[in-house]
Length: 180
Image 1 (cartoon, helix red, strand yellow):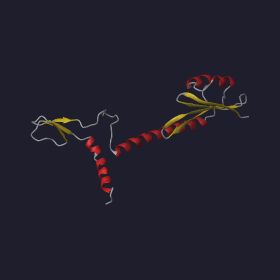
Image 2: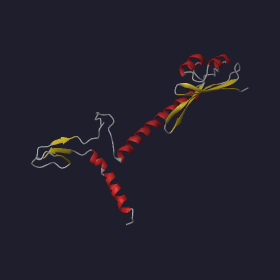
Image 3: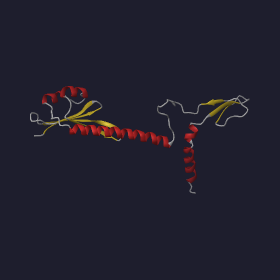
Image 4: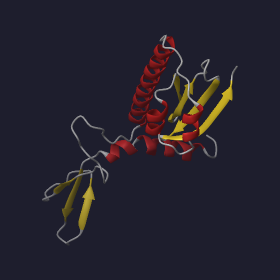
């Protein structure tokens, strides 16, 4: 065995039993000298008190999230969150694809409306002034939802493509480019 082999084995074993110790039942008793003792072994010929061995802040809610300390429990929790995130992402992509396949004509955005918008304008104000976008997309990172991009397509009367990026419910950037 190498020089560092034994400490590594002891650390691995200690970590593997950490979850068991966190959920163990503890006993508290006072001996005849007035000294308080704590142990996982039930005392013999002594009156004792059962002590809750769960960590502070543990909430036992029926059907709700429970604290977990094992690697398997952490994996299951992270995996469930990932699967839920993938389902949300898939639903957003399907909704976006359905919106793309719709045959509603482009409405565009007038110059007057564009001038009334600015960075930090709320998402609701953009919708009330310009109406719903001709196309919208949602950007995701592995950590979650990042923002929206709204497109107002050019029309014969307004030959400009207007792109509005929204993050956190407010306009992050505005771009307007002539297309034809």
